[in-house]
Length: 358
Image (tube, rainbow, N blue to C red):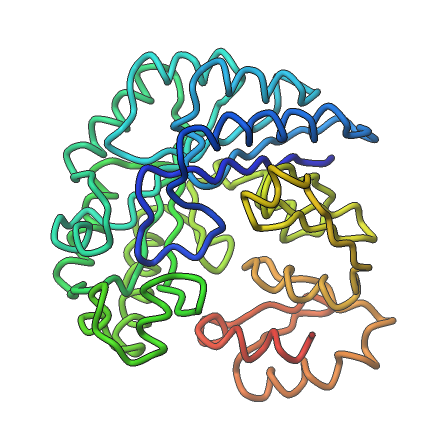
């Protein structure tokens, strides 16, 4: 069964670490974007009925009720098995949650990143730990118990004590799903560019060392697994039955259709990517770039992200068998029959493993 991803790239502020195609735009731009998004959805030829929907961004939680309703009315399959909406903590109103429910949303992902005020202020976030607790209670009270909380290891000024305090907030709030990422350093975020340039703006001088960030991640793995959150993907942990059905489609190479700026699609053979330029999307449409997927390679690139691993097919032994054997010898992969999976050490060096399958 297939999924749908919808991009809403509008935010009230641009976080320093964010490397997504999102930002703060003039109010009039949002209305024009909605028109183009609805046009793209209306023009789509549905070859299948989606079972999952994911609204990301950006901050789709900031959409007005009528905007969200107009978008989701064009997606067949309601009620979907899973319909996720990303929301900024500290800015959730009871009326909005009721509107989400009415539109078919049954899962909410909160971009918390940290529960420590000093870390949040350095990155441009405005919420507080207590505000997140109120949001979680509000969602549960309204009937949305399927909640994800994002955390990032490696934020400017982060300490071991602060990271542990954030983890302890998870234990207190008990979200059934947690995503724990290590800070990404690249040219697509202000903080990343500053770090690569060796500067100190945006708190770059206070970013923990790579080794310390890795230690924080390992601390999170141990903390979460001891308390019943199972790591099922490199950065994702869930109580049994609360794994993200939509994101599993990406890792298992199942089809999905993307709509909006920087949205991607996959039909099992071809990958399509819309322009990541919000203004370009509005003025000229999606401008999709289409490339044929190397499905054999991608099976391992995505499948090895999952802790369940992936089967090494007999027809792929000639192409990838040598790499698998080498990484087995180095302790980065383990093999049980045809099933190949990352070891605990392999997770930390997964990029090195993935390169061999490109």
